[in-house]
Length: 409
Image (cartoon, rainbow, N blue to C red; front, side, top):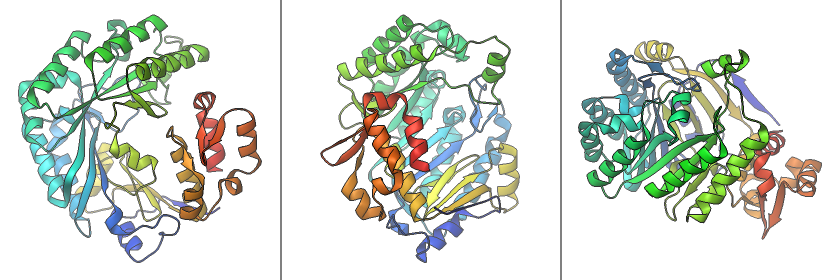
């Protein structure tokens, strides 16, 4: 297995041009016309929550205009325009931007990234921002089809621990206001469990409250303590105590059971959706499709090349305004590494990986990639093969990271 990692700068346009010449296309059938997805990172928040390690700056509205100019510069580097099936505007907090800035951002994006008929356009939102009728009106005027709300919890104590700036009652207000503004929007909720001090009862109450809101999509993520975050430091000092692993797993199981009983389809490890409401953008990632990305810390994948922009907002701004590549590092994947990545990403989906299709499209058999580890995972009840598909079992969901590590090799 060979892959090339380097910190030498490369532009996204170089990877696109490389792929057009046929380089890197082995194993994934890449052509420039297959790029149908793009991610845009908006690196602004009112406040950095203690658990957050995303690329962002807090309270720096003075940098928004420079950021928009930077995005325009990145887009201008594209060697051709694209027609997208999915566009995802994440952060940070995109709704930190003013109504006028949101309109300008989308004008810049859709000038080079045309939206195909029926495209899914997602924007992440802080619920407190959407109490502002002007921002709701701005979103209603834009081609947004899906709003992903950082609800996180409906327990005031948990929200306080997470340092969120909204109250549970405001979530109900925002849901009602969004449905009144546009009845065709899909509304998604992000939730966090295994928060220090959180109980099973509190988590169950949050789940019941979210079900009552009737969202189209729910993501449930266990809290992680990332190095460099305030939560990491507080845990080391004993200010915060991580929940025992068995309680974390129980909370995960409760979420899956409660939400599926309420009619949601559990289609990915941490994601559930009403029928027809799966995140098409995230499915592009999990099915190993190419995608573009713009903004600080944004990661892209085209033509067998994986690249990541500088995480520092200030470094990214300096480089794009100087006409220098904003990419911090990139990796050229050989055919085997592409197959391995395709395997572990596919296993995130509850439907798993269709083995014969995988062999035909990558040139590798799963047996060849995993060897004895595949048999061990099957014997230990972590993986199973059903109707020609390899998939995680319920037990496997609990130890998915160890299975994925074997896939990567």
